[in-house]
Length: 295
Image (tube, rainbow, N blue to C red; front, side, top):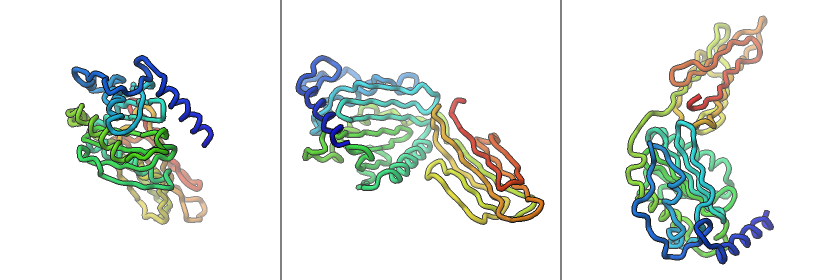
């Protein structure tokens, strides 16, 4: 892994010294500012919006960066998202949820996932004045991550491994860069076009009074509860995941040994529509559901 990183860094440094032209061009300090910054088109983020942060912006924060080479905008209905990558490990991500509450839920899910993955965490929260909420930490792979939410807009910036051995303030640089980006799209994320999904899980039985339930909270992850009283109900809201979707895991288990085996019932409801239901006399009933937006 170390050898791979050193080789990648060497290739990047050679390119920084020799690359020319538009793609892969290092900052010169003379890049002309556009007459206007790219904005969403039809309410959707576009590949052109990668240029909201330029190599000169990085240089002004003490970070060497090349132009964005890989640009990918989502095609799924919701949320609209954009990914930008530059040689050297820098990543820029934008996502536009239908409303601020959905964006907050997505932000919380992202933070919970980060906490599960990163063992040497140095987490700092709410360090970006222009954001409603933000967190900064070391990445689980290389470099540093900053995630912010403003209204319905989510922005993520990863400053890659290229500067691991250099003396610069990654937190300050990332906060400055994301603040600059937010100032260039002041209206994005202010309007609500929808609301979060609503999830209801139910368990019941005519034969037993208690059971064990196991389910996946869309934000915090796997949950197990022993000896819950029946009937049982759980409610939660979750953000939009687009076409990649989210798997909702839900099972109810009978813990009472009887003959004949007692029946237990489960049901999964999303946005008022029942998407899974099952009654079983075996060890338990499974009501898992693969939810995809727009499906």
